[in-house]
Image (tube, rainbow over all chains, first blue to last red; front, side, top):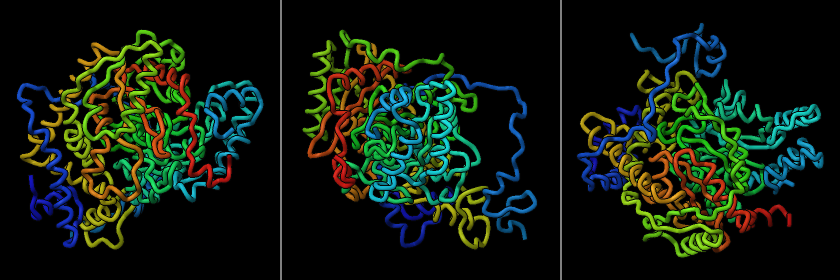
Length: 95
Length: 489
């Protein structure tokens, strides 16, 4: 199915992506091409078919709810673009 | 010695003919000479590699005789490596030094291997040509105007050009097999769940699987012995008894039933590749195998189903890249939403953004049944096709890719790139194991043959591959472009 620019802008927002005005047309065309490829699967009747989520029908393994990791907060926060006093910093959310 | 197989290097190390430090230095020298041209490595770990090699030599002197002890390898840059840059081919992680090791990495450390460096790849493993990497294209060592395939293009090129003895790769829709075919090396995607995904940066979690890229099937068996096995940190890892994949390599193929899918020999397949695979099938018949046509009726739907499932899972997996905890963050965000949007738009490349958007669309309100659920139903039909075929045959053989490596920059529209993986994608949807091995050369470029097996039948695939390599020498052919460039004979 063909998308229009408004729909592409909506999807971009849902995905938290910024698409500039100059890119919108090309992005719309490319994604429409991909959706056309995808739509080939609509040609098959799958009414009676059970969806397959995982190739082997296995049951999720569970474990005891115990702490097994050591606290590495300081080390992990060294990777952050901005952190202070053990907190991750982001732009102000509340005025 | 650098052009030898892992098995040969292992024997030479055991016999004391060479030390790990010597062979490691030889690979580092080769990387220094050729990586500028091939761009197969993003990071080279020269100092730590030599320390690990020295440690391996010391361990051997103390009686350690592990088969991979002191063997130099490369990891695809999708595997987290502690204190080493781990980029996943993306600007988003251009500065990410992992605080921990992936389970696969940990296992190779325990086996005493030497890490030469991290190999280039399509960004977040999304691509079939290695052209989506933020760190530049990888060149095919057979012809540097051609792509090496993708997404494990750096690993395949590095093995083909003798920049390492062996390498890891990952395969979500063909990312081990297709570059192995394009670069004339051996690669195997194991059964889903065979190898731990912990610490392997996620693309599409129900499809991703790590595997070896090597110079022979025997080497792939040696690597798989180390890589596979239960990991409690990965809830999809399968609990099965440990297996020695080298044990059945020499089993005779008399009576082996080979299925040939007619859909893999249809329109779009190049004459050269078809001929090479048919010649290989004739070779198998000489070895006592029986050829039988099989019908993978729904295989033409695999690409369309895959391009719903993989992007949908990717859009969820890649939502973690938000500029808060690690990786890239945009300059001077005005508010939180601006930070998320600009970080992600600047940090991700075009192809990654496209797939995130396709996946977001497929999962969005009102479209879930028409896309994701429908694709999962198609996935069932594809898996059922294989189940039926495997009632009558032991392995399925066909081409890995419809043609040889294409020119850099020649496939600019995404859909034509997606169709590159037409023979490999169905295998991931079904979760089956499959290898690609060299099967011929056309116009100076190698061609690959795909061997698909039943669930957990990697040993059979490797047996079938190894027997072919005992009777042919396609896997021993060397990449011509770089051999000339480096002045070696």
